[in-house]
Image (cartoon, chains in turn orange, blue):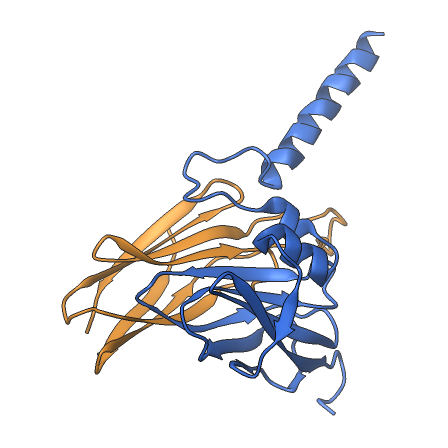
Length: 104
Length: 154
């Protein structure tokens, strides 16, 4: 699924702060379409991982209670400028996407 | 009779579709197992127990939850959790009054700081609970978020 990503990894001192904004509907499966009255099928990210130079730094499990167009920020140590940070996700419908940025 | 079998057939196909939708049928690209039972749990205790193997939480002052005291829009509530606990292995976020309290859980590596910030849905005024696993023990802290719907933010 092609999606919009906004990811930044900013090094400050020894700590890299990663901020990511992902476009995803995060449907709970509880809402109804107002026009048709049909339940909108659940569609949400279940797993998200972040890797620093190929090594996992964060492994997130998400449920439908994460807001639409999820935002995530976290910090890790041990990175240098120019290192790669890769964020990937998988949702409950089997779609997936990933995005890589360089530590700035 | 034929109509009946057809109905049955389509019904089971429907069930299969729901199962796939709910994540019962593992998609090919799943990176790690997704603990469906923990996300389906209806209480904080059972969600924590299913996810982390224990429900003995000790209240801790070493966990800081940053969340707005009043959220005008419960669909987007900014929550940040940070902790000074050493060797934090995971941070889990739960919303007590949500139908399914578990919102998200983050497993941290040794080089990851015990800090996450994200946006979650809070159905109604509720306590937002953060559970931090450190050294095999569970520590928790809570913070009340008031959700006003249709009001004027009061």
